[in-house]
Each structure stands twice: as C-alpha cells, then as structure tokens.
Image (cartoon, rainbow, N blue to C red; front, side, top):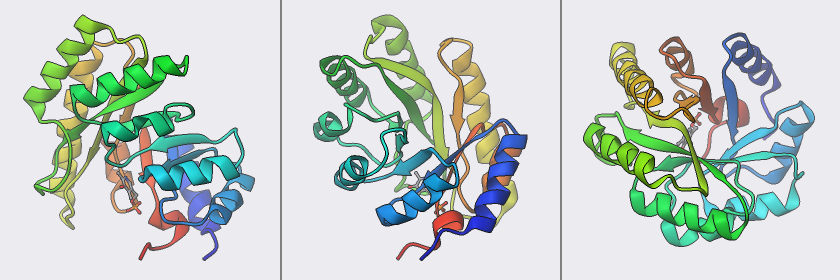
Length: 219
Ligand SMILES: *Cc1c(COP(=O)(O)O)cnc(C)c1O
C-alpha cells in the first residue's frame, strides 16, 4: 500500500509547528514504503524488530536516522549498535550496560531513552517511578561513556477516554521534568502514536512515533 501523503503532510507540519520530531514507524512495512517517504523528505524511521531493522538498514540510504522503538533483548544489542540513532525502550540497567559495552566496541556513543510504564495494561514494558529513580541515580554514579541518556519514552493505555490518556501523558511529562533537572543530557520526551499524538504534544511531547496513519494499518 502506498504512503498516505496527505496524512504525512498534515502531521509533518503539525509537528514542525510544535517543535516536535516525527518518527515514522515503518515496522512490518516494506523497504519501498520507506523509500517513498524518504523522497518526501522524511529521515527518522522507527522499527521494532532487530532482524527486520538490520535488513532494511543495509538496503536503504545511510542518511536515515534509525530509531529502535521495540523491546530490545540484551543479546541483540550488538547487531544494531553500529548504526542505531536512538534506542527508545531502555528499561533495565542490564540493557543499558550492554548498550554501553557494544557502543564502545564500535567507537560510538549510542543515544537512549528510558521507557516508563504509564499505561494500565500489565503487558507493556517499562520502568515504574521507583525503578526510574534508581536507574537515574546509577547513570549519574557510573557515567557510562558509551551511552547518552537523552530522555523518556512511554505509551498510554489503549483507551478512547482522552482524560485517561491525558493524565498518563501528564504524569510522564512531570517525571521527565524531574529527571531533566538531574541529567543535563535530557532533551527528548517520546510519547504519542497515531491515535493520541495531539494529546501527547499538548502534554509536552517533543517526539512522536506514528505508524498506521502514515503507512496504513498493519496486519
Ligand atoms: C507500533 C508502535 C508505534 C506506532 O503505532 P501506530 O498506532 O501505528 O501509530 C509507536 N510506538 C511503538 C512503541 C510501537 O510499537
């Protein structure tokens, strides 16, 4: 299915007007769809699966900023460490340490976001408030040279109730501001997807991850 150019133009200008970065989530979609959006000027793309990301990275332009937005297993970090632009889903010290190690092996500093669990659903990954606090302390102590922790990422509940979503985003924004006062590297708050990106931006998001509105529904 071709890229939805009308939605792309709309969302792109909306994000630009709000100083927000648009990450086009291309998971499960073919490389041709990414190429098409690349010719429209898009450079930031998000993927959820390591194998799929590796295949796309080798066949597409080197100037693409690849965002890893899925759940990352420590044993797979080595495959994306050479080229990944930003890892959104860091939710343990173990994973952060492995990214630090693999980044240094590649003479790189890898940008990361800490994932916070803000939704009601049990199934979603992420740190709770206390775990986040502990991890921030560790980062300040250890000063991992291979990672640059740039902010937070979160996903709101699957809900039609805007008030619930708004509350969850507001909570994440409060945490973001708190952490930012402790870590000067903080600059990204990644929250908002196809269904809730406007609410997210109104609650302080400066990076949204949008898939289905741009590439069509995934099966
Ligand atoms: C798939 C996915 C998205 C995009 O979802 P859409 O509803 O298609 O916009 C955003 N963030 C994460 C973490 C995802 O897994």
